[in-house]
Length: 229
Image 1 (tube, rainbow, N blue to C red):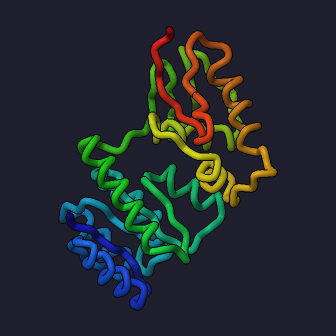
Image 2 (cartoon, one colour):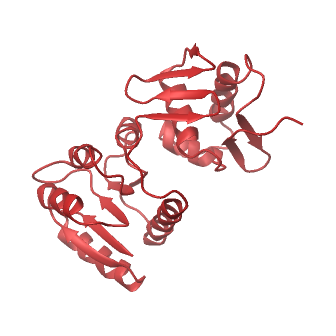
């Protein structure tokens, strides 16, 4: 497997290159956005690890240019920790988002997830809309429609629905939802995730015949179509 690491911090870049090579990956390294975008466009990589703050072209601009024509899985690895930054990255086409500092073992695990996902779903153009059954989300116009009916969602509800749709069929824990959507560490005393999912269900599922958002007891939530008994 061949990876492209776009990282301007020389010490971190070398640490990652050596560590990933020891994991069996072939790693090309670019130290600025211009070189990184050139390599990403000219060569085929299995996963791109992309820093957010780069000289030349910043990470989000590299991502936007890449998504014009390629759907290579991208893991953003950045010090930008605000939830707005994560949302921009994911909505801009990143497949995953990690914040520095990070655990190397977690980075490797996330790369493996992206590789498995890419193998299960062969390369295709980056979608501007997400669909599941009669639910459709337009990522550009930030509009959600089910069975032809416009859903009136808040910004957080739209982000939550987009995350569930992007990873439909995959159970997402409350911890991951809290981290990705609210930029918060999960607190078992906090019911913000449960409340938000309940409100989202009222808009996405309750007016319609078949629910799409399901609770997996003890694990989290999954968005998927299920046959009615």
